[in-house]
Each structure stands twice: as C-alpha cells, then as structure tokens.
Image (cartoon, rainbow, N blue to C red; front, side, top):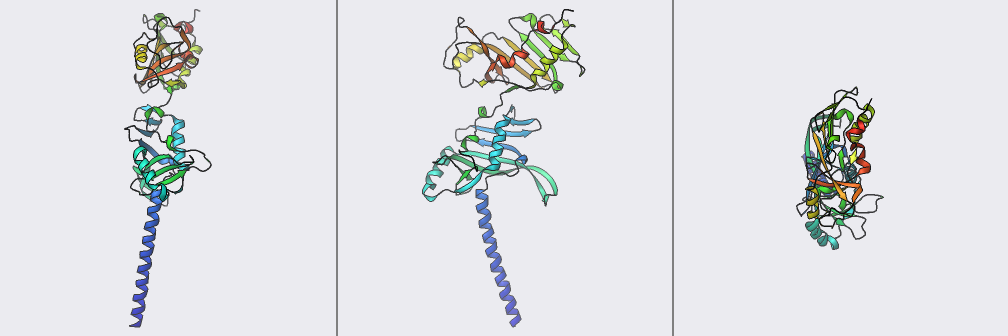
Length: 353
C-alpha cells in the first residue's frame, strides 16, 4: 500500500513537471516564432512577395536563369542579393517598449509593407541527411515598418503576433525599410541585351535614315560561318569582315540602359518622341526563339524632364538617345558610348576585295 502511494506521488510529480515543461516550451516557442525574422538558408528562398497599403506589389522569383520580377522582367541581381543578405543578417534588438507600442502599431497599420517568404523545404528531413518530398512552402510572413528615432533600427511585426520588434543588422548604421520596396521599378534590371554568342540565332539592325545600311546576320554554325543580308533589297553579302562581325555579335553580352524615363518625363513630350520617326531598331532572336526588340529615337540636346514638346530647331544630343524596351512598356535613356558597338552600318562590315 505504501509502495503504491509512493508510485502515485512520483507519477503525479512527473505529470506536473511535464506540464510545466510543455507550458514553458510553448511560451518559448511562441516568443521565438514572433521574433524569428531572419532566414538562415537564403539559398532555399525561391520566391519573395512584397506589398504595401497603396496597392504596390512585387513578386521576385528565382529561376534557372536568375531572378525574375512579376513573372516576366529580369530583376536587378545586385538588389536581390542585398535583400537576401538583409534577410540573413538582420537580428532582433528588442521588443517595442510599452510607451511606444500604440504609436508603432498604428504606424505599422498605415505604412507597413507585407513580406512573404517562400522556401524550398522537405516534408521528410532526418538529421539533415535523408531528405524526401521537396516542395515550396510559405515559411514566413511579416510586416516592415519605418525606422526608429535614431535611424539605427526598423520596426517589424510577425503575422498574427502581438508584439512588434526593433530589428537591425550588426555593424550596419541605417534602417531596412527601403530594402523591402513593393515598387516594380525599383527592382527592374537595366539590362537590355545579355546574350552570349552561343545563344544568338540572328540579329537584325534597321537604320531608318540609311535604309541601304540595314542588315540581318544569322549564325550558321559555331565555326564562324554567318549569313549576312542587306534588308533593303534582300541581297546576300558574301564578302564581309568576319572579325568585325564576330565583335558585333559578342557585344550583346551585357548592354544596359542608363535611366527609366516612364515617370520622369512629361507624358506629352514622351508621347511626342514615341510617335516621331525612329532612328534604329534592333531585333535579336536567341536559340530558344525568344525575341528582344528595341526601338530607338533621337534625343534633343536641351531635353529636360519637365519640357513640353521639342521643336525641330533644337540640336541633337550626340551622347544619348531614347528607346522603347520590354515590349514597349518602358521608355528609357541610353548612351551611345554603350550601344555604338552594335549600331555600326552594313558598310562597316563589307569588304571590297
């Protein structure tokens, strides 16, 4: 009887101890979940969604060829890498104080940016050795608020949590709000062409002011055999400088524009430029039959972002020109210094021997 009583007491103590441990763990886990903003394994991040209260939103997705913005634009690799580095390095400094709580929560509700992180995870992962059933999972959702008064921290709030936290990056002086931009223009890559020679099938360059110098070059094989055609009459050019043509084709490796003008230029002026006669057109078709088309226009030397319709008496800018890219969605400013190597006329490649 005495023995049974001892056993009963021991079991009761174990039950109480287990209850305390479970409650403590639950509380600890809850607190950790509410403050666990960082991503340790950023290589597993496959998609990031960011949105604000003004209906701006972006989706960044990792693909085999790099990061893509909203499913169709190339994203700026440097900025995505900075965002991934931010997700990995940021740490919690402290919870928001009671005195600042109401103000921070109200501000978060007004200007907070929602961030969703999607990672590639495994349904079965035994000791990080046996990994089975890989799938995409939304692993974190949190809101990014504005900076602290000293500009050394940023307020963040995990979804469904009650307590906001001050988040910072060790050894970094500044706030993190701007790194979570929901505006597509902030993420779009400035790359216009980025094709290796082996990826190119054909390139067509049209000179509207010199139609006889418009041409198309098609790559026949990897041995340096090309088909060069004058577009004005369909004549095949048999005598051409192979080295110059090779330099032309390899120049499409990394060509970038200077500035996107969509929101910088007066709409009336932009419309006037777009409907004016173009200078050049370049059409590049790659081995996957994907086409990159660019239409280029002259820029007046005195052009300013606030100007109205330009006049024909203004001198032409010899350093820069305008262009339409991304299927005509983006109106950009380009430099001749960058694009001159792919804007040489057919006569430059022809030989007379």
